[in-house]
Length: 235
Picture 1 (cartoon, rainbow, N blue to C red):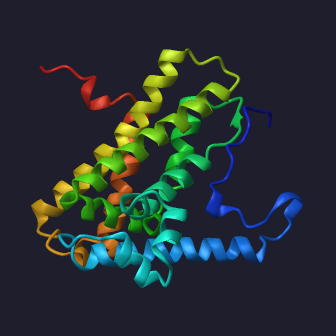
Picture 2 (cartoon, rainbow, N blue to C red):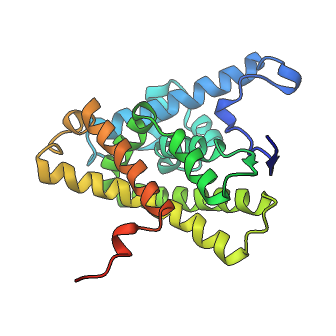
């Protein structure tokens, strides 16, 4: 089967080897471990009390590093807290690859992102989404992550060899991101309606995450199919 376009690069944290399959150096492993420790400490603090300020000093102390080291890795606390969101969106976009000749580019893009989404992959970003409801600055940073995701999808569409018109490519990239954001918002609203949003533990149960997964997939499917419910006319 012939394909068009080129695969998107894997996200940095997903790289398990250097050029030609060389293993990651001990120095790089240590850097990844430090980055993970910073993120874990920051998220743990936010989880413990969303209303308590999470500071660089507190996070650095919990991660066993200096304040200076913290800022060598992240420009702000919000950037560290937003890593699960960034990593999730990077994973979804990185699944974009060569497009088979017999599949429309729009269908291929929706399939690739849909297939990258699992309940397990959604858990950290779902938790962050809920925690951001009481943290306006983190919510704004998540918006920036969605915008970056749209840019990556747009780059994928531009790199394909099917001559997608620029306006159509830009509109579709934003539509995919909009579908994802709408799914998260709808899921959060349903949590409140059904009384499942009282605590993070309830909200992040397996059944709840599977509902989120199904909602994201349904939202993308609606987009792919042109929102059939909106195409009917009233009697």
